[in-house]
Length: 407
Ligand code: SF4
Image 1 (tube, rainbow, N blue to C red):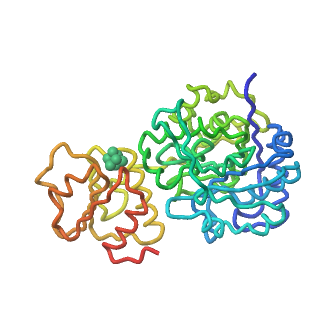
Image 2: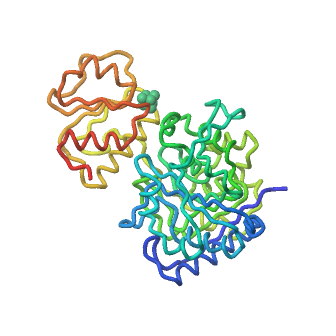
């Protein structure tokens, strides 16, 4: 029997993810229930302890963005869990590197709604780490998982519908990245990120995935993109690969072009072909759009920033582009000439076209030889360590070298 995916859509929803009233919440609660009903939601959560895992990468209450799961969907889902008779309701995620779960909880600012349904926040970063054997995966013999997630009987995966400059899309499988402890996050953060996520899928296969596409995100996603404010769509399935396949299709992406979907499909986790999915609700052809794709390359992206790439890979390329987009968005990117070298060189060229007094950044471990042989003693030269470096590391270094307050 084909797996089921439910799609619900409204032409208009009042309010925004950060400003909403009771009527807006009621509308979204009805829409969520309509979507989840197709997936046997009530039977799934009744009398069970439930963990809701949104994507909280970096909630920003001052900027109604589409980077995180919509708080209205979290509230609706908590209420529906309560109404369906869930025994206990936890909500948890480990947000982006450098942000603790407690800081994230404060930014999320949903205490009032947590109290209403007697839910609690789950602090992944304060939980013991359990190193679980990973016999079916490929990258590591063991993977670290926050022990606390095993205190719950049902795992509800609630990602945001958005594109992603590194992985193509960020949906249900990608949302498992929130289970990875901070110290382990950059270990497989190149092209191997797809494989890494499927390895985690072997350890934690969600019982249900509900994709929040009320406000979606296109362009320089997953962090600095452009909100699609009228997408007004929810997608749900008991099968995460089927949910991602439909989610990708709705953004105008061929699901089979996404490595993590292909790998997961090939290893039996679910279908990557719409013809093998029973779709309930609105016909996806009616609401499908072609989302503007993120631009990964930083070459000639911003005036004054001379990015010279020699064989770099997606790890450093996405990290650098995230950082530059973020600096630009914060109004901190200067037009003064600076050079960023990225990737491995076949040979150390003596005629690098760089003015001696320009700030120079050698980005990532591939650049260490260039840095030590050519710029070690140059006061304005900086090496960014890591494979890849975290994008906030460059953000801070750029601000330091240019005398800018990073906050
Ligand atoms: S250091 Fe080299 S291999 Fe590592 S992410 Fe950067 S470009 Fe890729």
